[in-house]
Image 1 (cartoon, chains in turn cyan, orange):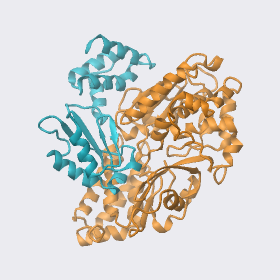
Image 2 (cartoon, rainbow over the protein chains, first blue to last red; image 1 turned 45 degrees about the vertical axis):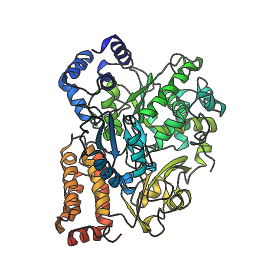
Image 3 (cartoon, helix red, strand yellow; image 1 turned 90 degrees about the horizontal axis):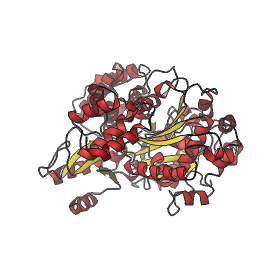
Image 4 (tube, rainbow over the protein chains, first blue to last red; image 1 turned 180 degrees about the vertical axis):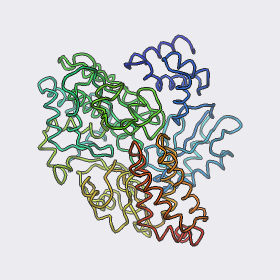
Length: 154
Length: 425
């Protein structure tokens, strides 16, 4: 799956653990990096490679919030709305994002550019409000900063 | 107080091993290995009074001493970098800005417990901190601080970053092990304790990032020096305080264990965000611990002082709320979190967290009934103590304390059928 380079990376990951099954989380990360999300075929492949059942893999994929079971937008926004962010205005930010992007939480814009999620505490409470855009944190946000950032994305 | 844990973070290129070593880094490590035996390291840490900074405050050296001295199986150190307790953001700072401090402390601890592998379990969202840690680990390997025959000794230990994938529960130490084994992060009953039967049934110790970051200083300067910081031998050492919410300058502040809460808010944090909105409440140890009313905030931030005040230091996530905060709304947000994060294994927690969230939703939407207030407490009381791990307690404590301390506000919400705080703000 995904070619020789990928298989080699998986072998390296597996070697870090006393049992292959422990490599499941990092292998799923690797699959998601290649494909963008994880489908049933990927789950079966990972199970076979690591010696666990596809049901076990599916259980893991659905337990953790960061494994995507369907494609998301090119820019995936996860807005933290837990207490510290709420106290600093994350609800206004959420409303603004929904309005600006024309989508609700859990949806993707029709052009596939943006998707929006509510996230639980992202460990950035001192720089609230904030969101994670793909891999990066954007902190101390204001409505203006959000506009500037989103408008600048290709 | 002299900056200890944060002494490097403002230096240019602070994550690099050159900067870390130029500031005296890895001297403790080279001092200890191999001339100090593993048990001597443990003894020093025991003597220092260092208690876990992740939330439970368990004595660190004592935890290590539970590890078997004879090796029949591989030993593991798991570094808990799954920082997810709402209001907590100190471990991220250490990993991003001083990764070698984390590595040196972790490897000293790994030496003390005779570990063969040290896994650093970093929450999945911390993509950049994990990258910084991985670069630092490569530097440490190149210097011979990890891998085979460390510092010319006969001790070998691998150092590996393992990324989580989004689950608060994995910060619970047994759930972290289950997750590291490639499973859903389900906590396990104790006993057996991880030191007896941990990661894949092998002796295992799990410690928080900040806890481990204290260790190199204890070895370098001695347990007696560590004990001079903080009020007493059970509350010792430097501490990172995470200040968030309605203050002018939120952020991570280092101080001695036992820093007065009001000093943190008013001096370090610059005071309340708005002059016209006085302090209403503080959650002093991450969202899991009981809330303090403004008049209860003349308290020192250490394990025993906060316990005496009916709360806990927890992870030192200090969340400050001013007079504009609706306590129903705030508690609803907290309850939403625990409902979302319950792993679903124990019925009282799986069901109870959902019930509490829905009752709070009802009160917040103006459909609350007077009996709902007691019902909330009743549900919380029936979760507390009835689950495998502490997530159940963590979900119950805020509900119990909010309802007890701000009952009038919950009643007013029910009576008016709407929020009486936000509409007056």
